[in-house]
Length: 197
Image 1: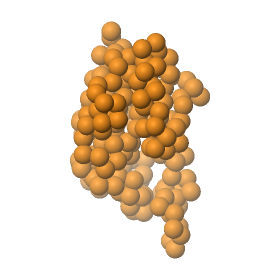
Image 2: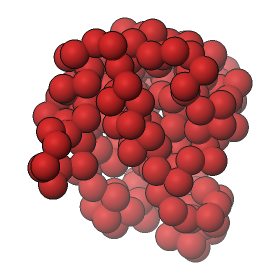
Image 3: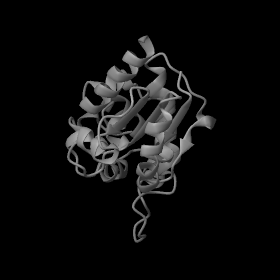
Image 4: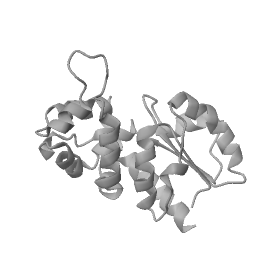
């Protein structure tokens, strides 16, 4: 069990319970601290690392366009995180981890399985990939919810977050997804190591 859980944004709030649950750990979603943006998240990371001397802390954010998770963490901490501070970065975005469960994602979106990319961590913009897949859905609520209305400047539809959060809570299988997502596989491995300690 962790004393505190911090995440970059809203989608991670939905993903973390499933991620921890796959490792025999639990968290009340209402206690997850949402930093509401990558800048706010990284600003707090040194403080969280220091607090880990007295508390067990888990944190999750997107790698975005940084080249390497280990380098991104080390550059902000000046070294490795405290052993009680488990900081994981999804490559490139949390959406990559969701897309990695290709069969479940295809079913949820109402598209053919072959349309879901086999290597989601190689995608330059997984969020855009999800929007484009939703446009091909046979399900109207998916098309209208995940993809933005034509002619608007919004990058995603009005129900993008609620629908993907629902997918994370009800359909996403982290173990199945980890076969196509090395960063997710590493996160699961580290969490299971922690759970067994």
